[in-house]
Image 1 (cartoon, rainbow, N blue to C red):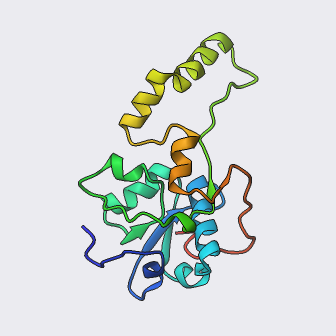
Image 2: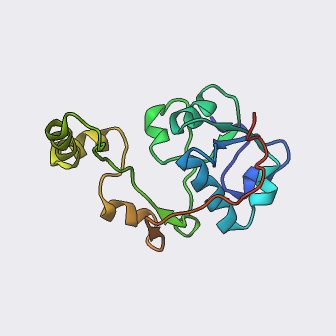
Image 3: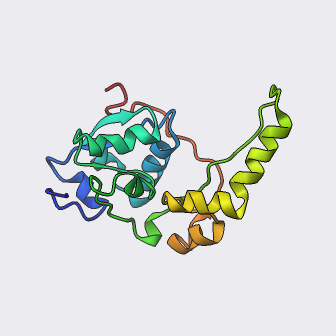
Length: 169
């Protein structure tokens, strides 16, 4: 449920709301959380309520499932992982500054280059995309653009230097 009636990014700045994000120094969803809050102009207010930084994307989602915080800023797919435990409040299109993707690659040190290439080919095949879509992932750029038509695609974002409240928690 959503007992504190969180319906917007601004609600994350309310007194008494506890927020968790991925560690913005090491977790991409944490970087996006900072970027989203900066774009909205409320990073300073929400930082006061950030009580923890998770070590991974899945650990960020788990914060809600384990009732460690009232809200997290995470990926859209989190709601598919635990639909009975996570109520998702989607951002408005204009609140999403950037779209990104999870890349697949082959290590230069790989001893199984052919098999690795076959796996990547499977990931991007219609069957592979169908499997990912079944778990709630967006699998094409065209689909992602529907959620944020004005967002930049890809690019790099650098986390602002300085301490981030809760980073050591």
